[in-house]
Length: 380
Length: 128
Image (cartoon, rainbow over all chains, first blue to last red; front, side, top):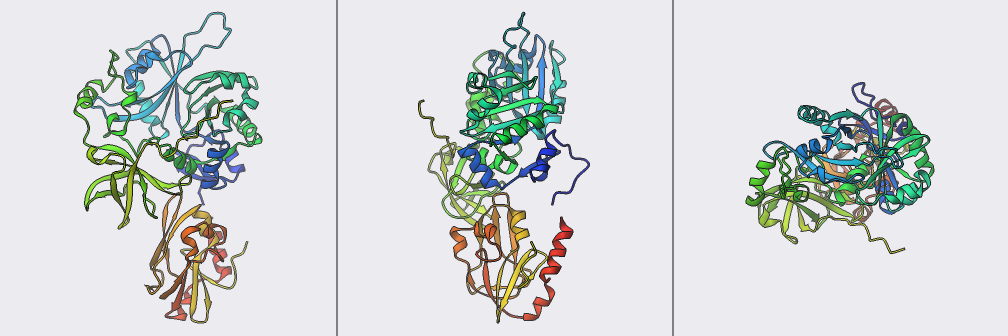
């Protein structure tokens, strides 16, 4: 069983996880729940009803000041000056050579309605847990030329992702229907709950609808328990990974790293080269964009039994052509699925490849991205 | 819950229940709980020779792959075909429906090297 490790950080919801009998594992320097009832049960809860994840380990920084948007546009591949208050956008942060330092989500937090004089927009940047120390140092090293300030919100807040077809309806009863329904996809806002501010965004990492909530650490346990009482299933990192893989959402450290550029992993849509935004890595990416890349990330589905995992080699006619970057079992599809790099000429849908699963050849086929797309809601 | 007393246990969390010269092999409740949802079990074909504490198969959970070690030496006479479509039997019923293979024992004295149920229960107590 998980031994307590004095060097591991704990989120403000740690006691809740213990109370629920979670299995805890070290992850990105934190002691995090990998599962409560079981990965498949939690996965299914999110696909069919509503589940929640403690994602407080993810790095959260507020960017304040008149130059906040300009600073974020400087460090992100997508032009964050385009964000209107209440909007959010996904992006990469790159090195000068175009290698991905991290994938991030940036939100322009709208000023509270009804304020006498509208306060300047505050921004929230959410970074990967494993990259948080690196990204904090990197941002601090680059904010100097801007009239902007970086505030570390990581330790003093909790972040809870509530996901699934019943997530919004459940949140209606907790945060209020008017507020919840005001948030369109990728939009964000703030509301009050028990006298404290709760930030919410219509985003997630599961392929389902839902909100991600950030609030003060001391309010976290009460919010978690209220959601639990509203029949939201607590879910661990295990289900988070199977859900994001089915949705073909990238995982930093698996599907991309500093040696990967955004075009190789299908992130062209978060790189704005069509205007003057001068971001770090732009020059390199401008050269890479027309030249194309030597490898491309594809989705593959197993044609037989056997489970592909990250680092398995991909073959075509006996020749090694690439590597699986994320792989596992898809509870929704009942077969193994994965993502991996192959040369562009083998990336077409239907392309037949094999994956070496510990010495055995597993036949796979390139399939459209994503593996799972949530059913369109019927019109009310 | 104490482990069933009618069988022997290995440190790698396999059990064997002996009936005459045949041993039925599976993994323990502790093992299935540690592995989590099991989605694929790969077993040797009937006729394969297996050796005491050597790898004889693989078990894939949602989280990871683990090796199966044979608690006895001998020849595989039968494997549990139901696991092909229902690997979750190993989670739901590790000592019964989730059995994995039957092995014709080469050397019954190997059983003395394995733990009794009470010894195994003490052993896993020490792991948690």
